[in-house]
Length: 480
Image (cartoon, rainbow, N blue to C red):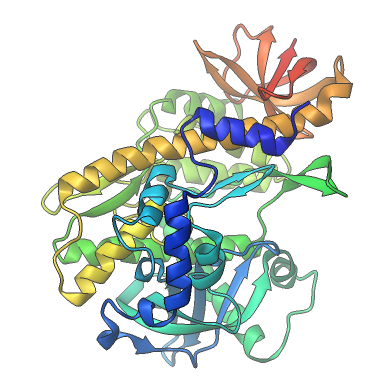
C-alpha cells in the first residue's frame, strides 16, 4: 500500500505540479542566502523606513514556519485605532523571471496535504529569509490604517519598512485568552491583544452591516502518533483565527483601493453572484425563513446570523452547504475605467489577495505592483499580462485544491478501510450530472454517493453506509 507522501507526489505530478525545486532554483537560493541582507535592499533602499522599535507580533499555527504577517495597534485619543500590518517583503529577494519565480508561477501556491506541505518558494526563503520570525530583522510592506469607532477605515497609507517580530503567538493559546478560558497576559502583549480584539470587532461589525457573510466551516487535519495516522481531527475556527482574518480582509481592501486610486491595473479576488441562489432560498425556506428571489449578501447574512443564534451546533453544516452553493473564488483584473469585479461573500467591490506572498503567487504579483507604485516606477505588468496571470492562478488554485482533497480523502480512506458496512450521518455537499457527494461528520470527509442519490440536493441530511474505499486514488464510496 502506498504511503501518503507517495500518494501526494503522484497526485501533484498528475496535475503538472513540481513537488521539488529544480537545480537552477537551488543555486539561486544559495546565492541569495550568501548575499543577504544587502541584496534585499538593492531595489529602492532609500525610502525604507525603520519601524523595528514597534511592538510587532504574529499569531499563527504552532507548526507554521512561513510567517507572512505581523501587526501592531495603537489607541488614539479620539477613540480611533491605528492598525499597522506588515507583510513579508518577498519580492525583495524573489525577482521576476528567475528560476525561483518561474517555479512559483508554475505551482502558483503552497500545497498543504495530509502528507505535508509542498511550498511555493524554497524553504530557505519562505521559512527563512522572507519569513517574519521572532527576533529577526526583516523587510516588509506595511499597510497603515486608522479605524474609527464605527469600523470605517478613515485613512490609510502603504510604505516599505524594516520590522522585527517581538513576540510569536499561537492561535490555540490566543483563542483561549480571547474566549475567557485562559487568563489574558499582562504587559505590552496583553494591551496589544485587547486593542486588536476591539478594532477587529469594529471592522467585522462594519463589514457585516454592509452585507458581508459570516460563514463557519469545519476543516479536518491529520493526527499522527509515531508517524502513524491515527485520526482526522476537526480544526474549528476560534476568535484568534477570526481576529487575524479580519485584519487580513481590511489589509487586502486597502491594498486594492491604493492601486485603484492611482489609476493602476491590479489583480482582484472575486466571488460571483451565486448561480445556485434558488437552492439557497430553498434552504432558508426549510428553516422557516424567506430570502429574496435575487441574490442579496445582506439578506443572506441576516438569515445566517439568525440560524447561528438558533442552532450554533448545526450552523457549520448549514454554512458548509452555503459555501458549496456560492462557488469558488477566482482572480480577475481591475483596469481603471472598467466596473470593478466584486466579492459576493464580502459584499465588497475592492478586494484582492496581498497578505501571503510566501504562499500565493498573486500576492507576490500584488507586492511588485505596490512597490513599483511607491517608487514611482512603471508597472511591472501590463493589463494583458495580468489577465494571463489571473487565468493561470485561478486554474492552478483549483488544481491544487483537488490535490489537497485527494490526499485528505486518501488519509480518510486509511482510517475507514476497516469500517466498511458502517453507517454514518452526513450532509449532501454536491449534486450534479457528475455525481452526488456527501460529507460525513466524523471523520469529517467527503465521499461519492453511488446508490440512493435520486432527489437529493446540496444541504440535505442523509444517513449513508460505507461501501468501499480506494486509498491510492482517494475514493470513498457510500450507498443508501
